[in-house]
Length: 113
Image (cartoon, rainbow, N blue to C red; front, side):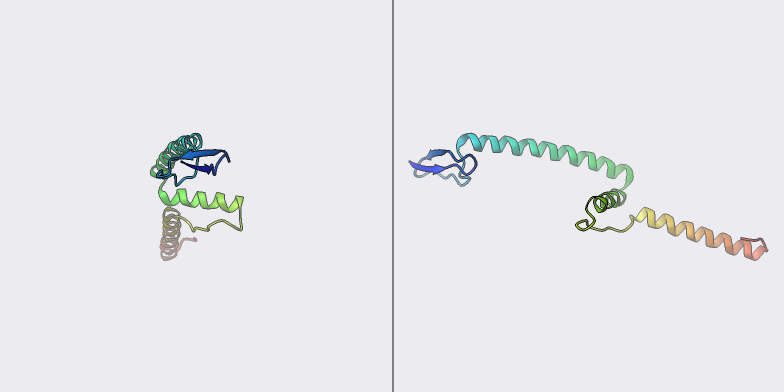
């Protein structure tokens, strides 16, 4: 048997000479780590489902735009900057186009824009 020092808690533990303990953790720490990772996976899955619901409801681009803006407010120097989502750009373009068409139509018929 080989005596090792647990990398997590610092206690000594023993493994068989031919045993393979790559994690370098005692059995209690190994189990605790696996439980913690399983809980983190469950939380991550729940978060992904909530974000997916938001994306399906509001659009992926809009969710990314809001996340980028919130991140920029919290940490201006470290935030990733994204531009406007396609829906916002398309909406602006359509409003400008419609305004331009209306302005030209009024000009043709002699109304003030």
